[in-house]
Image (cartoon, rainbow, N blue to C red; front, side, top):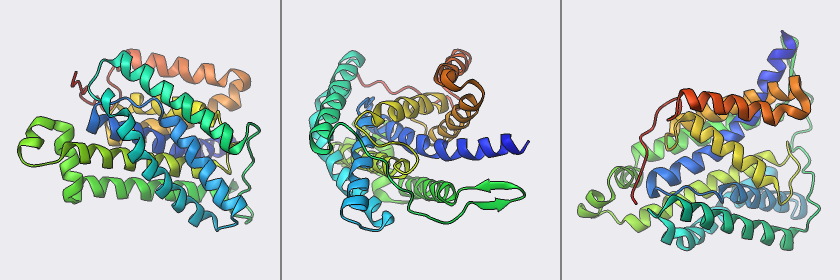
Length: 289
């Protein structure tokens, strides 16, 4: 039983990171109707940026992550301008356009940081905490707390601020939002910047858990995307539940099936999606084509 609980905690830690990635996918999709397949590469850029300020500039880990979120969020504004022509277009164009942009980001990261990657040391040197015989890494607790706070802040932003309400209005009906004076382009840009910031937070937190290299965005991106689909694409609560579910499944599959864990995760994911095609929360599909 202890082994299962230990695996569950590890899975929730990974799941919290997948949930942040999934939130980036869902937020941009809700607002722009754009499926951004380059989101995984934005996570990777965030991971590299945070690790650079932490390891090279020797800044405290928390400060490095905040700087990475700000820089990557600003980069999101630029990316939104580049990808804006794909908004509301045919899905094939979105697929090709955003994947191509992701490949470009991966190549750019290789040029800037090299092809070998880096191992990011844990910012916490404290020994694992013993809870009833369970040994929990302090860094895992930090990841769970930070992810929870980021999610609460995002929900509060969307539900309690005028800007968030405007973004919700654009998500429901961009024409009606325009008619009442909401600047749709600005709302989309902010959604993309927030999504990129969440991606950078996920990448920064993943640094001490996973090896940071140019291909990191591929693995995190596809699991974050699967989490968003599983929860109900475009649904904020669904992204969180989907992320945690994929993380726990991933962790148990790694323990039981080792080299076949990825296969098991996506077989289970496929079966669930065949039963629940719109995901657990059944978010309505956005179609602005």
